Image (cartoon, rainbow, N blue to C red; front, side, top):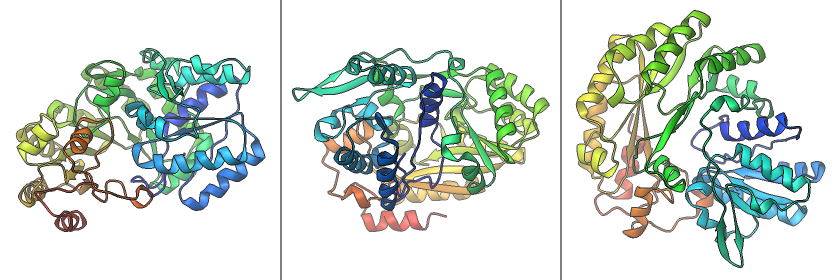
Length: 414
């Protein structure tokens, strides 16, 4: 798991956790090396030589793929094994396989059970290339196998493996906070986000949300309490509040069983005063609210957020009335951004007065609508990906604002 100069300093990766727990449940053994700096390449080398694994797998987002490729190449030179990669980047941009020749293939989409089939076939020396969700090169041509249907019943999955991450240390380094996800998928098609691109990989228009059962989520919290020490929970879901029936049942049972303060994300256009009050009563102490841009054109045309400014204002007002802390999320540096639109976002944050105002610089990820637009319009500049700081630098040449001004507003946003 590579996280070199990552936007999140030290986090748990649920994708790897679920892959590992499914494999362990079926009798396989897994080991994990976490790569935080290039110096950790040595740890990968030592682990490979010591363990002699049959299969080495990576999970990669776009900003980490350059490092994943470095390590895959190194592994190829020291040990004969199968090398594969999955995650968001291969899912939404599998075509990049043709430019990196040290992988046997990629996994596209949700692959817990496909990867289990793959590992089983490889261990038994059967043809693993026919596995669902797998793609590979054949005579220079990209071959994509059929995608297995997404898991609708999330209770089919064991709880994600946290032990291979030394999870207690992650809790300790993140303000005594444990993390949890209760659902998968987001049906909104924001142009800068991967969800619409993931949907398109499955031939769908939207990446519809699937929910774990309330009882299974509560059981996972019980498991966490029995194994780890923590004081707070963060529900990492993009859409924790979308399904009102699920949310009401969960909050009602949660507050009866646990006295653990929690954070969650609240999407403003599905937020109500009643939801905020219910969150507060159940133990929520902070909500994550995405403004992204206060400029209506940038937010709703360029980003396709389709959220009214009044909905943003109401969400912050209701949270403050309930006594909740607020964390606002903002993005600057998208196509069409000007000094005036950035100032509009800054002034709006000042008016909303969140507890913390966070800001990212837009990254044009391959396979997303806005990322592809930037490529088509020739807005990308030449960069060395090894030294690029994702969401903290810009990859774009914008005719409407200079990079110097953009960086000044990013650095002084607070």
